[in-house]
Image 1 (cartoon, rainbow, N blue to C red):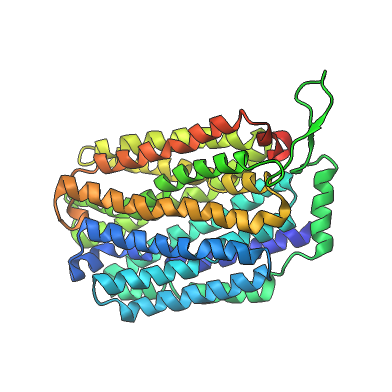
Image 2: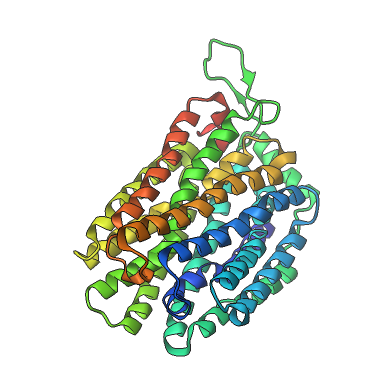
Length: 436
């Protein structure tokens, strides 16, 4: 137990440091957009290119995660993220070079999260898995917020390249943490976790008896039991990702635009905007962990439905208050920041409980690929809709945001709808030791 927790803490520290480059571009976007005359459509394409890099690598990494050392994958991927993000400082000279370099950073970062989850899945039994993966996801969110905060404030006083540099260097420290303190799960520890599951504490292969008058029957994991359950939970993940990553990528420019609309000077608006955006994203740290625990106790689909409905409601409302109430904009942004990521780890936890252990890495990689494919499309669509209603202005100068946020809300509905359908399948009872 102590060894599990040490591994979780070390991996979470590495995640919090190693993923800081993820949103440093969005944090300094105002200065980059001014320097290279980027429109909302250009910005959406760059954000989408970054997500495309993630998708390119994640399926392959999931396959590799079932066949080689997970710790080795984590180390080299984290090191590569630091190198590629640092190269952005000297290599970004226009729209195309920015797009290509952000693509490379996305490819590097894409090889971190899934192997990390696969490693934690081996260390933790399913009755502890939701909280552990939620904690790890919370560290990811902390990295997003930290990148926004550090990069935005340094860009005001020292320039955007300084902001990018000091959010790239932590990735090298993260690689060191992985090298020194993270190790693959030995067979005896994995067998102990499996034994805990088979004793009835939790597990993906329990005997389900929905009607006492009938003889017990076993609900099989995929592939023997079919792929209906994994398909539905992955469909919900697609809706979740459509909404979440476009929101994270665009909430910074939106907050900055909101501050400028009430007359706050440009440099102060960038600093305040970075702080507010970091706080909004940072709310996902406790929500990922706490809602993962709720999912362990109340059920995976229950947690997905509640979080999905709450975040979609926020997306549908936030754009209405632009230019009218800065306080409400921040409050609703904080609401989305909490609920948007709350169920993020649950899709992966539920998936591994419905598939054979020999397919965990591949299944996680495939789910991430289809989910992050949505993140290629949604930021670009958001930017195109924003430009359609505002013209080819620099993003922080846009004044009509509601149609773009409504696009996120509509796509996000797929998450709770898929979870409600999943509840009707016997295979759903494999999740959370029978707590659907």
